Image (cartoon, rainbow, N blue to C red; front, side, top):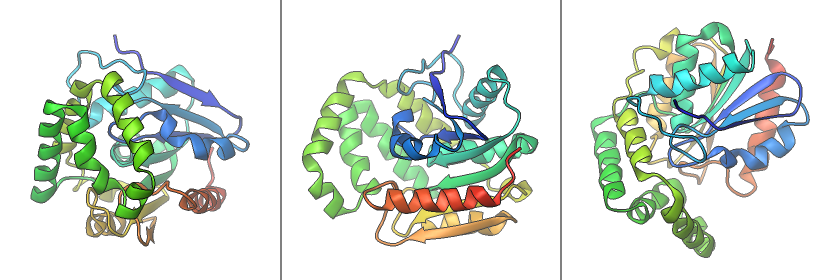
Length: 258
């Protein structure tokens, strides 16, 4: 049996926060501090991440989607807004496609719905790095996530994170997550989404290229896309976190979350 670690904080309409590959629910800390005053916030560790067990199931986007469904069923929640980052945004897309009646609004940070041949090579290289060590993976993915100046300004902190994570993470779980990403194929399904959708993208994202995110935006009828200059994959950096919080709250106020 797979144990999925999740937290419920605050009161009000429900927002579910879904983190990305090799992150944990703590990725959302800075947003939750503000959002929990107005909303009920559910965030969870994807299976094999953080304090969630990996289990013995085959891992796919559907697997992660089913985990979210079970959390909502356990908490007796029928209607949510989803905020997803990277892998979490793909899970958000898939959940909305499968259960449109449950999703009032969809907010996607750094989104992919399938992989191009170039991206498959990128993720295969990340997978191979994980087979060597988490440190190799960390060193490879870091410059894809952040711009050079941000890495240089925070290099001591990144070294601490790498050293700590190397001792505690389950590389096998991350490998299975990458396999799920490589198999991702929602390209022909996102057109089914009629849920109000907000997409946030970094102009220089190497993992989820901007042109792909623009195409997803074009394929979703009720969507808007905001592009952040001078950012790559991770958008929740420095003062930009405050900007994103304001954008999220403005968007959520426009939606009816039952």
